[in-house]
Image 1 (cartoon, rainbow, N blue to C red):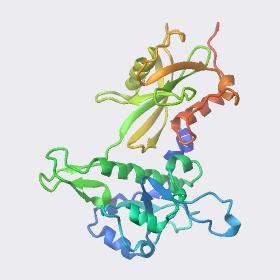
Image 2: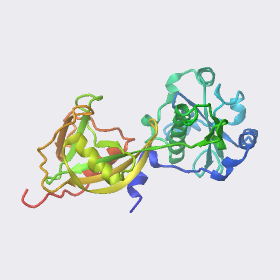
Image 3: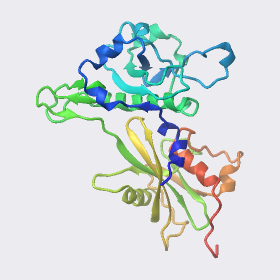
Image 4: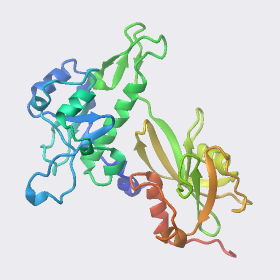
Length: 328
């Protein structure tokens, strides 16, 4: 299995050593905040700030997320006190030296307004994932995933007591029963299905505009393999049976807590591409598209955004040699 496809996925890029051993230090944050070389990634409602260009000569350079020295955020973490140690930078081309420790710090509204009142400078990951460096995209993705988990898991699932954040922000400890709660990621499969005419199947979700289409996807259920989830989800959403699910790559999708596991599959023997049955709940419309149709800029079809694995799978298929079954 090659990682060439995964390396092209915007949110799978990274250039950080997560430095797991350091998380166990009880004085970790005290030590890092006292180090002028530490950098803080301020976040507000899931958005980060863009840094100013390093110089006027680099105004057209790729955007960077703003990282602050501890003294530049003297008030410390926001009202919740939450902070997460992301690890150490490995990017030799970043403004910060290799080995720089980075902490994600979610800000409250007052802190965010004091730091940057212009809300247009606070940007979302979906919009900038393809523009930022590997390091910046990686820490942005990592931060959103872990902070969303903290927001949704403030209490012990066993007894309901409020939990305490430990281990550099990567564990929540229950002071009542002593249990530990670890971050969770929900696995979801997403599949590019082709028929015997080498067309791709796309569906329109009930929550989207009528002309927006994407690949079929769904969450993996308990006790289910990825491959079994592909077969089940496709049948539930389209009425079709598929065969030969082939893994292509995976990408974290912290909106709020998923990892998308990408597959390709073909129609099973005896299945006809005309037998489409949208489930009517999640999927309202299903269509087969040829390469020519999807490549036509005038077709009015809206495809998934550039930061998604769905778009990467479609783009990969578009440049692949056509394989039409004999007799078609």
